[in-house]
Length: 125
Image 1 (cartoon, helix red, strand yellow):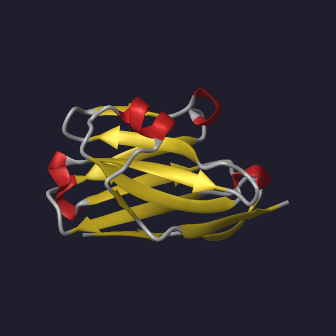
Image 2: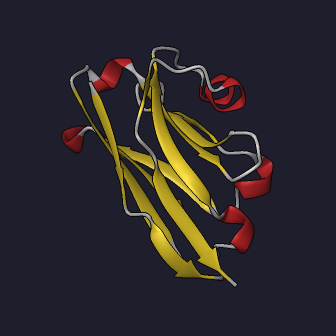
């Protein structure tokens, strides 16, 4: 089982990034995928979660106008589009898979079966 994040890096305030989570080794349709982040000294938080099977997503209200999650079944990949980035978005971003198809629960509690290695996103002021 692999979840591989890509697309991170350094961006200026107000810029955009699209993260990709490419998965392999499990049936993509049987799992929901979430994006989480952890900044130094802070708790991990769920930033966007999706159940492609159910067609449902969850994004915290505080991020809803800037973050969008989507998936591509043909590529077994989930994307996180992040716009108008701010320095406080700086963190390591992880994708994770869960067999539970409740995106809000996944994002809030973070219980997952598989995790990626994470990728750094840095937003400069």
